[in-house]
Image 1 (spheres, rainbow, N blue to C red):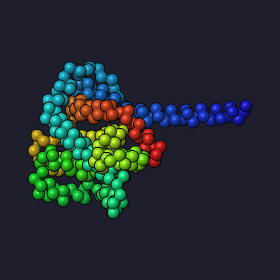
Image 2 (image 1 turned 30 degrees about the vertical axis):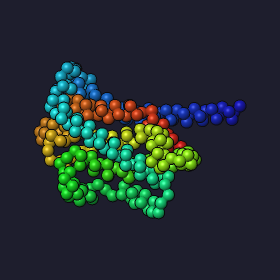
Image 3 (image 1 turned 90 degrees about the vertical axis):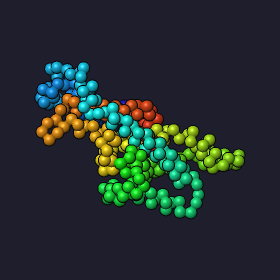
Image 4 (image 1 turned 90 degrees about the horizontal axis):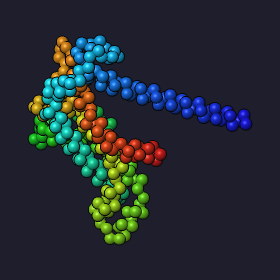
Length: 283
C-alpha cells in the first residue's frame, strides 16, 4: 500500500509540474499578444501610461480604420498575399518532387545531392545577399514580387525537401511496388498514390512556409525599390518616426498584420499538430 501511495504521489507531482510548466509557457506566449490587443484600443494618452494599465477610454471605433489607412494596408496586404501564395505553391511543388525522388527513387549520386542540399541550409543569407542581387538583376527579376518569391523558395528549399523526404520515407514501399506491378508509371504512382496521401505533410509545410514568407522583410527591402511593392511588415514603419511613435495605431497595425497568418494556422491546425506529433514519435 505504501509503494502504491508513493507511486501515485510521484505521478501527481510530475503531473502538477507539467501543468505548471504548460501554464507558464501559455502565459509567456499569450501576455504579449493580449498586451498588443489591448493597446490597439487605447487612446494616445492611455498608450503612454504603459502596457499593464487598464484603459480609461476605449478607442474602438477608429483605431483599426485609422491604422488601415495610415499603413496603406490595402496595397501591402495584397503584395504579401502574392509573395506568400507564390512561395507556398512553388515550395510545395519542388519539395514534393525532390523529396519523393530522394526517398523512393534509386539513382547514382542521390545521397550526395541530398547532403549538398542540406549543407546549403548552413549558409547564412547575409553571405549571399550581394550575389543574389546580381542574379536577380541578370534574370530581370529585380524589383518584382515574383523575384522575391522565387528567392524565398530557393533559400527555404533545404528544410522543405528534408521535411517531405522524411514523410515519404515513412510511407511503405509495398504500396508503391504494388502500383508499379499493376503497370503504373512513376508519374502515375506519384499523382494517384503518393500525392493524395501527402496532405498531412503539406499542412505542416504550408504553415512554416507561409509564416516565413509573410513575415519576411529583409529580402523585399534589399531587392524591391518601388514602395508600392513592399510587403505588409513595411507598413509598420508608417507609425513611427525619429521623434514619435503612435503606439495605439502601431498595435492595431500589428494585429492586422498577424491575423492572416493566424487564419492560415487555424485552417491547418489539426493536421499540423498531428504531423508534428508523428514526426516526434518517428524521430
